[in-house]
Image (tube, rainbow, N blue to C red):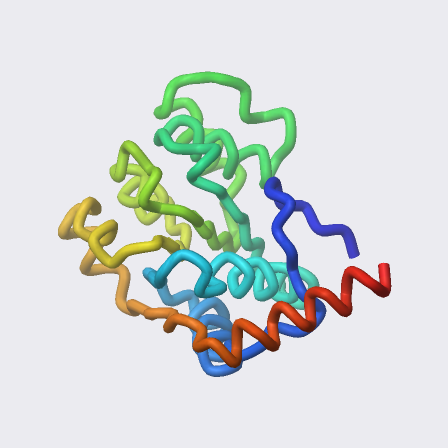
Length: 187
């Protein structure tokens, strides 16, 4: 299976110490529940998200799109990324209204979930309202809960789950590092 993510982040074969959070997030995705996830840097948010997306896309009829907000910070950039994930070559640089109309055409009878990772880097939070107005389910992932405050009250009312990812303790970090070391030796 090909991993199609931008950063050279490590996605382990087995996600350690995140079973409870993984099951919750998977349940939210399956039920189309908009979610905000937050936790400290290094708590495994991105790894959790990417492992679920990969599994979800391989067995579900919905399309889950990963957007890295360190690369796509504006409404236009995020809209182009979402559109190009649904229909390559149709996301040429155009106005937001043009991109939204193209998305409307492409979304007919199609369930799409957009996961915006590193949401704290988004400079135009109106993207959340635009995606929700298109009937797209969203998962926002951030290092801090304060990022939730930058979205509109209407968007907040539609994001019904907030999931905090706890820090790893010392023993967990040790075991994760040992697992990564074993994986690298094998490859």
